[in-house]
Image (cartoon, rainbow, N blue to C red):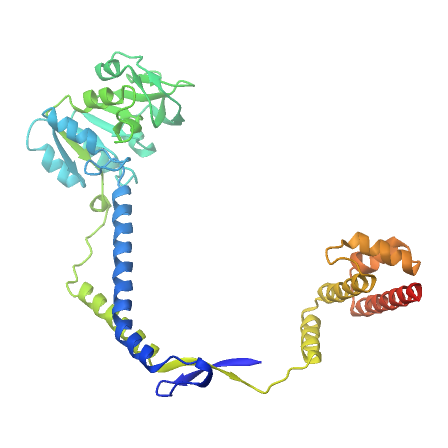
Length: 398
């Protein structure tokens, strides 16, 4: 038996070449710091790249996002057509921007449904041209009563109403959500009809419900008539406010306090941790192998495992261990291949001992001991079978 123990750093080289030479150890100590610093820098760079990519891909329908799920392409085309496109992240900023000129078109994409009923009513009072992208239950109840969500629909969908933006589009495809007009007395106009009386665009007074969210994305805007739909829908007026509610719109939210010393303190703790790791790692020298004059008897291992089986009540596991030993003994004595199956071994043992195959299979495989007495009795049966088989083989050979 061998054990690995640390050798003090000042110890010299060991016999047999097991220890690191002094020259190699000195070179490793000189280069170890720079290697560790390089690995840390590489790890930081990888984390920054991953977090930066996640942040970019994690802002769907953002007009400054060039990823497939962003809407930068749509915003740039609108600007080239003379439309002033402004992104806002709070109701207060949206109100300030809407007050600077004529009533703008306001696009609302409240992905996390942060606005409450009061805020929705305040938003509706800022303009007479409001576009709701993928609105939820509360937005529909407050701003478009009589319209309900209907889930995803399959496209492409064909222009089927007199709205100019829909007529110019012709067909619309991509990711499409459907809505139902549940109030027959409502003045709502349904466009882009899908199955089961669903529509991916609904006009209710000054509010437009847009379920064709794929048409807004960089990835799908160029498909079919998607570009014509959204450019005409959002480019009717000179100003477009692209409102995506943020944390400031949550009732009772206050910005977290600025702690100027937090980042320097984190960097200092990180540097101290790296220094402590190098300090602790260099206290002990290289590992050496020492032979110990220890002999562990097989009986001790057997008894220890048996006690564990007894303590946990693992009778079947203990019996299976005995069965495996008996089956291996039968196969070895009869010269069977180590790949022989249990059925072949049972047939061979039955032919030589005169026992029925079903009886042997019960003893070697199927029986489950219910008590300690059952375990002892089945253990004795395995021993008897092993002895009978051995005598039968030797008798046939003699």
